[in-house]
Length: 440
Image 1 (cartoon, rainbow, N blue to C red):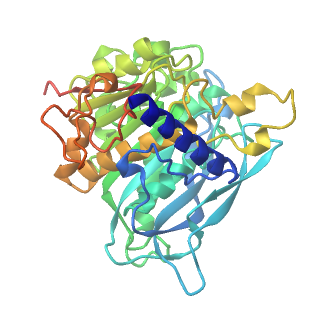
Image 2 (cartoon, rainbow, N blue to C red; image 1 turned 180 degrees about the horizontal axis):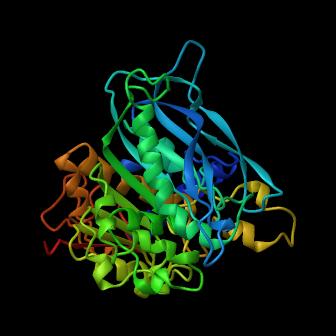
């Protein structure tokens, strides 16, 4: 009987997958295997593209070692998702024209957001979530999460990090220096635009006193530093670091750095954060993290590292309330990137690198996206909306394979039931969720 049920489930999932494949480049897929909080929320979603310029930022690319620091105006492009009210004739759905990992290839992504839809004032102001991509990447890489959270009552701002995108990738030192500064600048800029009377679409719409950060790879590197992980001396002086020890501004040894920790950022999610395996943090620097943080990683991440990378940051952030969600046998692309666009599949013999930038050899991308949407919803509802009921989604048996499904024929849970809250039978396999409370 169990074999027949399993076979039936696999057949159903195969049919569902075939339906998904018939829809090109959808970022809004919620698969039958998805945990319950992955579903879109009740609100319509609008989307707009904004630009913001930080005046007189240090210009890493044009600064030479030992010479005065050059300065420039640094402009960032932002994608903003927000709760919306659809007008007559409008229905959910829209297209994003995006540059891919192969800059010569553009793709059409499809989601639920409506371009330039009217913002929803009921329930405003909404908490803010800032999304920061990897190196290289772009503001659409986690668009699945941006739309999903906006449908649940968040304003989500995703950054195109200049010098770090697919079509303008520059020397790594620029990303090392600018990533945390970009995240903080965008927070301040959104606060300015969100003030009443600003004439911005964000006026009265967003509450930056309740801000969460999401960073993937180099975005995660920025997040760790923004929430209190001051750079080590070894990182400041590394061969890849910016000239003139400029990273020392945000180093653990700089007394002024501690004053940069912004109390408006009340929670964070760091996905495969880069840097620990390259010595950019040490035990003393990680002690400065006190913001609640959810780390997400693949257990065989060969870019940011796992045992000496994300797990080491998780273990070292001893003064923070923190969790580590591990996708067993996943690599660096665990959870964050949207599915690879079909435009990158190409003919037989198409190059692997652009496609592999989005995909994982073991895990299905849609499944990982759905799991991230589920936990991000619970995490930010808990910390940005003070919804205490969301804590139950984190109080689980650490290893999904050890959780017991015990439900009777009428759907009632039995005393032996320890399965992960919100997960369907068998779908927590391959996941590990660990918790460490703060020392202070």
